[in-house]
Image (cartoon, rainbow, N blue to C red; front, side, top):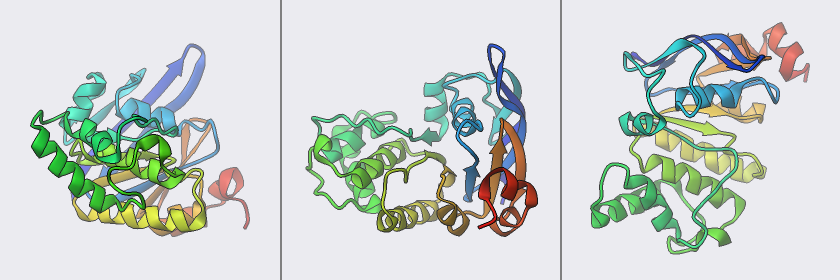
Length: 238
């Protein structure tokens, strides 16, 4: 498998604050990569730089070999990188399918076509609610699934999930893990930020630990779980 994303020596400064420092990694096509670390470690900042909602101060980000470091965020979405956000913000007065169609309109204005696509994504993501359920009435887990579905509707090759399981109970987390694996089976590369270590270790082929803006450890779940630096900085002995 080839690398779909390459991040080389990326730093993000906010005034005098160094949020991410000299970060480098490679993301293999059609893989699931976990990004973990304490609050304030720079995980979401890294997502912001990949999606170009915030520009990297120094360094470069390559997508399929093309430098995308300084392009505009809507161009990033159009070329095939999508993301979710920690706080779900559906269009509350619209139903699930209409919300998903918003994402699909990025690449098609054909209403019939986008609705058909939204229905397929609805089935893939596996909502517990009916497709015509109004968004502001959704449960927490279905709001999370809607955030994923709307991003998927943009037809991405890379999907970045920012704490998509936050606020979900253990059974709902299991459901979301199945959804993420099903999404990967469609050929989508997934990068996920998550604080539930059990989930990350069972879901990902590679795990990256960020600490104080720097990459502390990178490796397989087993390698990271047994790395003394990761244990001391984040995982704990248990």
